[in-house]
Image 1 (cartoon, rainbow, N blue to C red):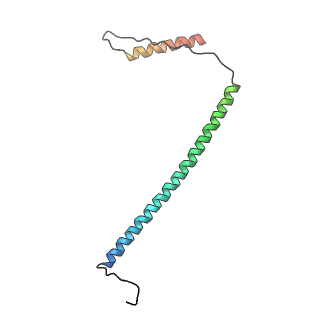
Image 2: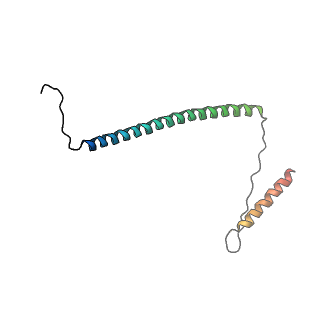
Image 3: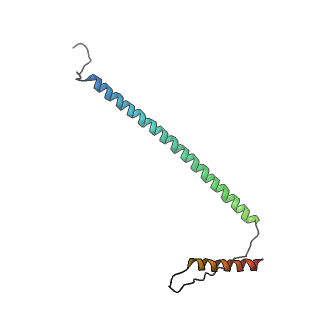
Length: 112
C-alpha cells in the first residue's frame, strides 16, 4: 500500500456516472432559474423606482397646476333620484332611468 489512493469498487459505474450527470444538469438548470429570478427582481426594483419617481413628478406638477388655476366655488347641486314603484311593488328600471334622464335634461336646460 505504498500508493495513498483508495479505490472503491462500483458495481455499475455507468449508472453512477449517468446519475451524476443528471444531478449536474439539474443543478445547472436551477442556477439558470436563479439567475433569471435575480434579473427579474432587479428589473422590478428598477421599474418600481421609476414608477415612484414618476408619481413624485406628477404630484409636483399637480400642485403647480392647482396654484395656477383659479379657485372655483361652483358646486353642482345633488341629483335627487325618485324611486318609482309599480303596482306589483317592484321597481321598473326603465321608468327610473327615464325619470333620471328627465331630471338631467332639466338641469342642462337651466345651464344653457
